[in-house]
Image (cartoon, rainbow, N blue to C red; front, side):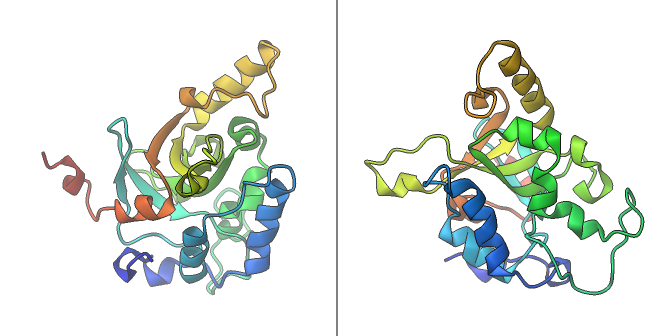
Length: 216
């Protein structure tokens, strides 16, 4: 169980999670790949903190990058009042742009994720919150379902990785040019950086400040 000090800031939570929306997102992948189901710890956390900004947003990747999580991806409305106008699409609630269905419908994201990466968090770019940025310029946290060792039950939870959108787009383009299947044969090492073995380990590694990760 993830302790409450790792919860999201209350007024950033987008609204109550409709669990059927999450399960539909899950079924869209598990119909083809049975192992692609959400980590139960992630589901429990999302039911409580749907689409919010964590109180502890900073983390470190295995390669040593220090990054900031801007907000968790959501699974749709209805969203809490007040309405939040989308600066890219006036008249639309900006929180709809952070919905997993909306994100996965964007060609640049779908092509770069391929079959085995699933978005769940949006990252800052330097000082810029993802709320200030266009989808095409945001890097994401993903669940990586590509490497499963079925002899070890603990490894059946997807790993957490950082997904570099620009590098992923380059690899998808190269993949098609080389005649490889760009849905299943992307070389993920070229555009992902591992963070943690599973969602719980990722959350327990979050810090309030980047300075906490630079000690030593």
